[in-house]
Image (cartoon, rainbow, N blue to C red):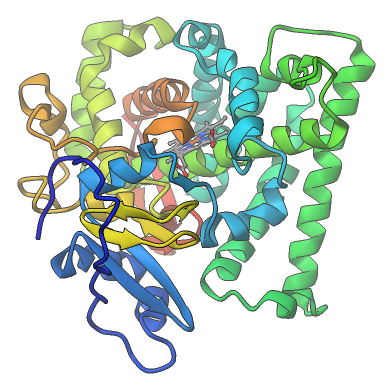
Length: 455
Ligand code: HEM
């Protein structure tokens, strides 16, 4: 059965969704999910619009059609919870915008939203452009093989922190933040797919390393907040908004909430953008003709001067390359929710407390939604063609009240960086490069080692 439109709820739905095929005794579907999650999630729609998965003793409901993933994201019956968010809680805390629910979440979104509004973004333009050209200069100076994981994450951390927290402290802190986040995100993914609870408290080297990185990140964030307070400055940025935020009684929000908020904004920002810059550089390496076209577009729109933020809206081909990269390599490839009421989805009963998962990766590569679904084709985002894409079949930033606040910010940043680096360089894999997907909390190439050839 395939459902392509959101339909009224049937409160009396009694039918359980089918169990997906391929479960084995004891482990259920867990072994297939752990072994090859992208392939496993991508074939689930063949089993139904909503299917039950057995992960060890646990049942999880997988949602497979664009329409129903949209319905989940938009419905108040499902909140931020479930395996992904539980694994993230050790990092993000419980009082930050990414993990809070209900009233607290609404208030926090109101605090952070102005920093991400469309009219706030041009002010970040000069920083984004500066960081893009810094990459070009660094790569020229490097004159050898580039470790693109490091380069991408460094750029992502610097842009987020410099734009949103106006930190001059960033040179000293960016490297530490990157190193800590790499350790933490790897550890959290393991905790999500292999939820061994107390075993992660045993002082094994990997656990000690995870705890050290977590402690260091918390110290860093406290330093960022303390530096700002000590400076006595109140620039018009996100950090000032957080420091001045009031709770529902009009009292200043607590220190813990400020701390959790900084982490909850910096870490998803760095991880997702870093992963996407890596994917973009992989795409430019494997499809050099895209780089040529971007260069032509930059030449015709910008001429010989530097690309500036104001050019971004005219760089439509470049933006379509970014969009197509987000379709095929969505950094956020899996999402989870929890039902807070007995409810219905696609005609099936979903019990209160059920954990749901869905995969933007699977939805955005589905042959039922996209012709030549596996092909990299930026022109599918031309106005005449993009209208054929089913609703919610392209939601790399999600929809509804948990939609990424940074969608415009990120698109501007990624388009600018892509234009600047593709104009300056073509890319080739070095022998140690391993472009296979690395599946963690985010999706990105495993180890990208590239040579940048000046054009
Ligand atoms: C390529 C870039 C990015 C992608 C693909 C992305 C994707 C997403 C997605 C899919 C969600 C929704 C999660 C859910 O529905 O459960 C989300 C939430 C969020 N993102 Fe992003 N994101 C990106 C960049 C950023 C940046 C740069 C920042 C901040 C600097 C950021 C901050 C956040 C925050 C704070 C949330 C939680 C919002 C809430 O729960 O209300 N993201 N992001």
